[in-house]
Length: 251
Ligand code: 13P
Image 1 (cartoon, rainbow, N blue to C red):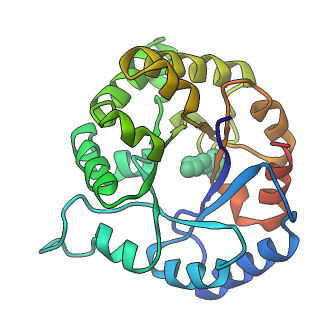
Image 2: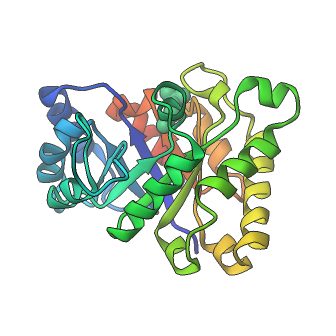
């Protein structure tokens, strides 16, 4: 059985106090047991606090990014070793905002993927087409090249540490969600691609999350699709009730 995952990407939101308050609420209100793994990705500066707070709760803390180099003169960046020493073992890579605003190319991302895997991270690898790509019906080709150039080079055994997150850029923070059918169509395409490029067993075992304006009222329908194994949530992960409402959608 593939892992089901509901992950909250907090982006550049929540100071230390807000981080503590949101985690307190999540911990207090989250169900005792759930079939999905709950992941939260606070900003770098709040990771240590989040790790301490979530200890023993089952909530996994992820970083939103990581530099590809081991260490050195990269002002403002955070390395794999730094994250590991803060007990962070999961990292989001390739988010469309990193690609669009910070120049992260498929080539850079392939290096980040290698560094993360070499340090034993679980990677949540994001990709997705822009509106113009979908309008020109180029979306499958764009997604395929993001995957081929960014992550398909890894050794087969490393796929156990990879989660994919399909996030169509036009659906992020816009209130426009891919329809459950559009999500399923793309997720099935991705799974087929993995089956051919890697192996059918890896395709079957790899969790593929959907991200882009997932809310409590559309989560169940999207998560109900056979190739959607959970979600990567932005805006709605900033409110405990909404985030947990989305988690309910996966049951
Ligand atoms: P929204 O849920 O705010 O659309 O953001 C999705 C996202 O970018 C998660 O990484």
